[in-house]
Image (cartoon, rainbow, N blue to C red; front, side, top):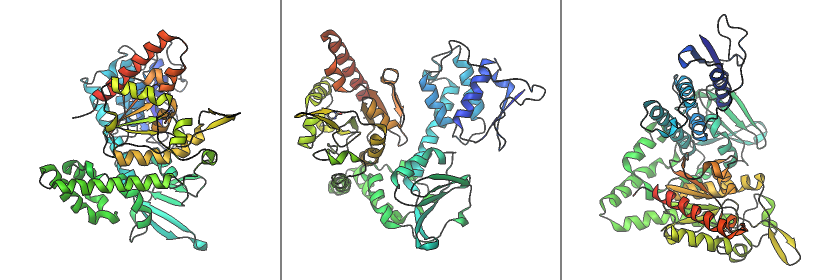
Length: 465
Ligand code: URA
């Protein structure tokens, strides 16, 4: 029997290293015991087998990207069997390379359910965590929140909170681990108890804008809402008093009895979006605002089921203040129409909201945004996503994909399939229309354009009615 000891309950990399080495050594799943401990990783400390060393992955065995994505989520599930289940799947993948596509397979189904529960918990933490202000020595403010996740998702959410509340000093306390942000660096501490967190009213100003942007009343489904917002979270939320009204509004809408309720509730989302757009007009989160003419914010209906994300405005968009109106926009419009998507019913935006260029004589030449600029601008796209809550988001090109998924993406590998997003929506990745414009060979251009349209059709087909 092998004992694989992982250093933390959510440590995907440690699981992957251990699993790869075990698979390479042909260790069958039922001969491995997985455990999480404080001890340093000691993956092969099986009794009587002290010299077993991690081996390289077997030649020719490549793990599909879809499995890696699934495993990254599953590792965070609060299920003691998760590591063993994943290892069983990995072991089978060597003979069944398309295993993860078999959604009827009981193991795959079980892993998918675990991943979905984890994603939902990630989203809940983002939506329902509440800070309370405390005064530290010297009079500085710190914002402290208590949260009890169901899964091991706290570390995975750290970057989200750093991004959103970069200018505040905050601590998030949870039973398993605590996170502390001092405005510059993130540190981790031991778990805490609810008694360690301050009582009292949550800090309303911090949440007013935030809440308006995450709660899209136009999408309220009562059953889902009660499931999504268990009472244990309600007591932490200043806006809880609004919930019965929102539910009543949703009921009225669902029964179709009070048509005006729809427009007044929908109006709130529109107003929140307008406030966001106005705020973005003054954005100085990175240096790009200094040379661009204006912020080019997203446009389209706030209740769109489909969102498109481009890279950044081009020369013409910068002058017009509207996304996708230049040459790439024309290709985009043509392809959208060819895929039978109603352009007026979709929300179109960019990963980066200011035009980045190099001045050459009179011409302004497009220059690719770097990781820091994409990261700085994620603030806006996340807000747009939370407001619009599209079922399907199509990332046009690698910059958009990086912004949406928070990692480097190889388009050729990821196009043509759905990638689950933490808010329950789906991302679809395809090429950027300007890539098509740049292709020198006419035949290849036609071919790639047809593929682009096919990608858009697939994304459209993923929409629920
Ligand atoms: N390219 C983009 O990515 N977005 C635009 O708005 C225009 C060109």
